[in-house]
Amino acid sequence: MSPQKWIIRDLLAVTTDYLRKKDIDSPRLCAELLLAHQLKTTRIKLYLDFDQPLNERDINEYRSLIQRRLRREPVQYITGVQEFWSMEFSVGPQVLIPRPETEILVEETLSILKGKINVCETTKASVLDVGTGSGAIAISVAKELPEADVWGCDVSADALEIAMSNARRYGLENRVRFIESDLFSSFDDSQLFDAIVSNPPYIPAEDYGALPPEVGQYEPRTALDGGEQGLFFINKLILEAKAFLKPGGRLLMEMAPFQTAKTMDLIAQTGFYTEQKIIKDYSHKERVVVARKP
Ligand code: GLN
Image (tube, rainbow, N blue to C red; front, side):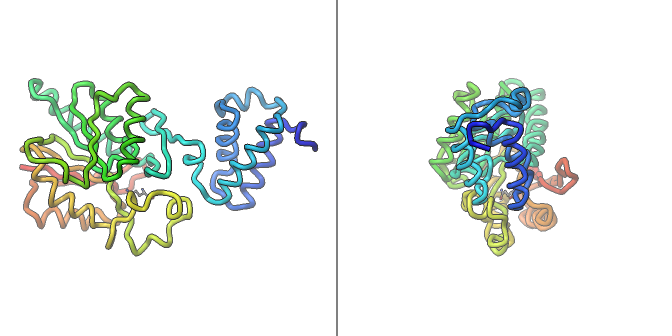
């Protein structure tokens, strides 16, 4: 077949086959997402235009997108977007790609802050997202709670640029204050929060080499590497967050299921918090630990 004769249906079928043979996960989805991206359209539209012939330029450019995917670059860095909390977030190699399991962290944060808004309407409920990356958590909370005071911080200025562009995309740029800060280094205790939420780097350094290439070779190591047992930042958050929480405020941290028990011990050992609990994600895996300051 000459390149000019390709129609969407055939190109997707052949590409899917090829990706499958090269062991790429979800080959059909990948073929569709990248073709929709190349044609500046949606996956649904591809099906409506199944018999549409493609021009040579689109085919060539699509081929180079497929080549990038074969080098294990994540689809989201090729298309530049990832959906989270029903919004589309810009992503790039400066930031971790938001994961669906992190939505449970947003949900739990919302339920805590909603309680605060109802109880005490005179002071604004406030939340800080530590290590905000693409801004996914902070922006989702700001969207859901127009009354809340939302902050996001990150050690990476490049990540914050992406976070701010994501906030602008949803008209929330005046709702989230993004600050460059290594954990709490740019904060002082004149600013206290009802909730401090974080999806910190929690991959054990010793497991880093075994990560899939999509993660280990493409996503930012500063957003993933949690040091020994992956607990370095979790432990720092437990020790440092207390000084930035209002009385009754909560610390919420995402982690891997195998880290929750140890985290509960670390929290108990500090004596800084009264209540603490583990929350499961939508796949029934222990994913979030919440601790309450007295
Ligand atoms: N959920 C990510 C992964 O398992 C890790 C995210 C993180 O370290 N915060 O790939």
